[in-house]
Amino acid sequence: YRNVCRDICGEYYVAQNIKLGGPNRIVEIHESAFVRRKYNVGHRVKTQWVFGALERDTRCVLVADTLLEIIQERILPGTTIISDLWRSYNTLNQLGCRHLTVNHSINFVDPVTFATTNHIECLWKHVKNRNKRENGTARNLLQSHLIEFMWCYEFKAEIFGKLLEQIRHLISMRLKHYRV
Image (cartoon, rainbow, N blue to C red; front, side, top):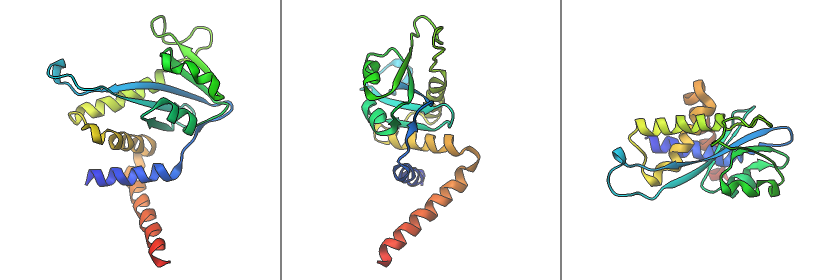
């Protein structure tokens, strides 16, 4: 039942083709590792990295498997992107975006630009807490769990109503397809 609901939410996000940012918009990006090892014992499991982006004004969230996917396909040119100093972020200026960084080994807010990644890091904390409450997530279901989190984060008090709207929309689209 929950997997079906996650699939419905996923179809919504695919159809929306959401873009973040643009001129005078700030998007925070950050990577997060998802690994399940109970009490840090047992066999080592391959770390699954996920990249996330959060637009500050709209609170719109995106997740992707690769950094370039989220930047090139989902973030508009002219956006100010804030990240930490992870090496993979070094080429962001070349993608038509203004790139501000925070050196977390020194401070959490850059004293010159006031750049911070606190919002996206807080978001990852909520994602991981939810993941822990459910005793982890199977590797093949992580993407659908992230989509479910995005849905709940975006629609908060309207979660069920929006799900019903999406079901109605999908049914009407499929009925139109069969009437042809």
